[in-house]
Image (cartoon, rainbow, N blue to C red):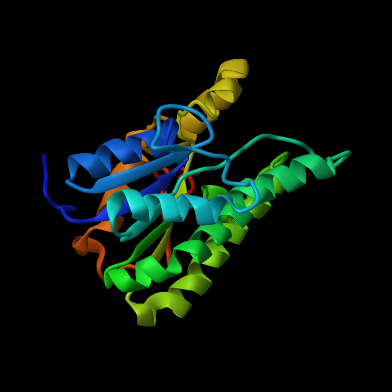
Length: 237
């Protein structure tokens, strides 16, 4: 076990599966104390991040359990395809509620303990769609563009308080959220495998490892940017 994150207290949302679960495991392996939140699964607190007052309850529970809060890894998210022709308001609202509004609210609720930390870290999860777009991903791409913009604005605002804010932009990652799309359409998975210069889909651990880096002192001068973790998919032809 590494002690790189020893003494750090980190809240992880979306902690029950996929990138969130891998992040919990990696942060704990690096010595951090972690408080995991998800709407279902084996976590420290089971709660839907979109519920009224949920973010305040989450932060209060994390601080009570750990005694402090040094970092947020905001891994909760939803994805899905719906074309603009007939795109429903309900789906738009659902995607924005989880991917953008809950991120904003959690950060806002956590400001006091993060400022008190003196070494605060906030890691948001964007997407390659934070910088690009694709057919059928109107709501998802818009939400991830918003996450990247939120990250950059907060990095500028919170830097004087000693808080680093960074966005990870994953490519195609094989998680429980994306697996149904890959299973239903094998050519879709093959497309992303071939588009990546490294010729494979990403794994949750590929993202978790970068989150662990960003939470550490090794990333003390990294803030306000989006970091693509996509196997060079967006750089390849």
